[in-house]
Length: 201
Figure 1 (spheres, rainbow, N blue to C red):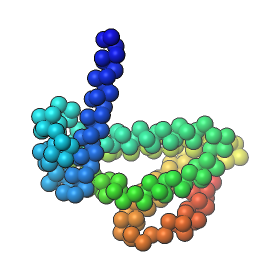
Figure 2 (figure 1 turned 90 degrees about the vertical axis):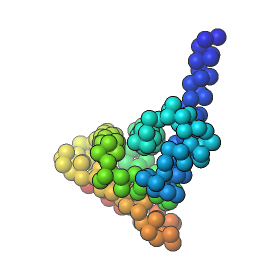
Figure 3 (figure 1 turned 90 degrees about the horizontal axis):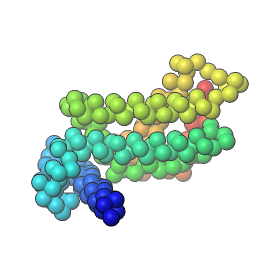
């Protein structure tokens, strides 16, 4: 019985944390990081400020949780691609999903808000830099796994491939915000060969 209760409590805690993160996302997008107070987040989440502090000690902790959630999703995608027979082809095929995520302006606006805080807040900078290191490591490992003797390249070239791939999709996030009329299908038609060319080195 104790185990069952523990699992129930854990599920309730996870649900509450997700509720807070969703409320914080909405508040950050609407008011900006600095103007989104913990009381506003609490009100949006439908709980008391004290309840919020039970799960997150401050807004930086909320950002850390948001970034960790995105990081876990990225790692999951990398692990799924790693299971494919032709990893490079799988990465090209998944360009469409990457484009669609990049064109989600709600998530992109949140990312821009968090990145703006990087230059002002050392703790947020640490969170973002650490997460970026994980993304580079995961993507680099995936590219390295796909390498055959015929497709061998230097470590420097592989690092450049990682940076270019990340720059393409992160750049598309900005373009989707700056240009609401971005034509998805036309971009996708060119995106696949671009990704393939980067992977080929």
